[in-house]
Image (tube, rainbow, N blue to C red):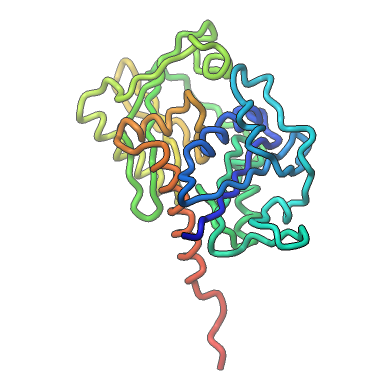
Amino acid sequence: MKKTKVIVLFGGRSAEHEISLLSARNVVAALDRARFEPVLVGIDRQGRWHRESERTLAAAAGDPRGLELDAAAPTVGIEEGLAAATRPGGALEWAAGDDVVVFPVLHGTFGEDGTVQGLLELAGVAYVGAGALAFDRKVLLERAVDAREIECAVLGNDAPEASIPGEILVHHRDGFYSYDAKYVDAEGASWKIPADLPPAVTARVRELAVATFRTLELAGMARVDFFLARDTGALYVNEVNTIPGFTAVSMYPKMWEATGLSASALISRLVDLAIERRDARRALVTAPPKP
């Protein structure tokens, strides 16, 4: 059986560069090698693209602040970085074929703001996750809420489904789910899956997660985060993460695992959803019929 090449993009120019390496490591580890062939592309802090080896990700462990891309990895142009194969003689082949999917594991700026997704749309390449989302220089200020943090994973395209919700429990001295609490301090936070919620609230979280996904016209995957007010019990949509983490402490794969979907099955499903969405776009009529 011909394997689908999965180009995993990781690193990037955001403040979550190192976390992206941790996520990419787990994505690659969960790929079904009977169906998929990984192609690793790391983007450094200056925006340069590199063809990386799996050794880079194998070394991505421990304190994320010390993680780096392989400085010796060859630099390639963007078109070369999205190449799916090498033709005889070493020439690179553009990856617009039916057997190629890009899996962006780029958190934050230039990863979740639609920048890379816009490039892939122009190239006609299948890719995992939502399309190009709005980004501006404005800051949104919200009223503080004394609340529990509840999260829910969503998976799908036109018929999205929600996972069992989970809850983040913060123990760090920062008092909130900070970078250190999440990634550096092993005791900084913990999670409870499923979240300890009444059945009616659990159902409402899952319903709102799917409704939010549909309203924002997302695709593939998203993690919808909620605040559950401690005093009134009101449920607020806090934020939507369109490229959720896949690290060892990331809630998105953990919630799906608790719902009955293994890491390998989850990654396979995401790749299949990317191909499904690309085929649907290709079926659109974008020009008038010829006379």
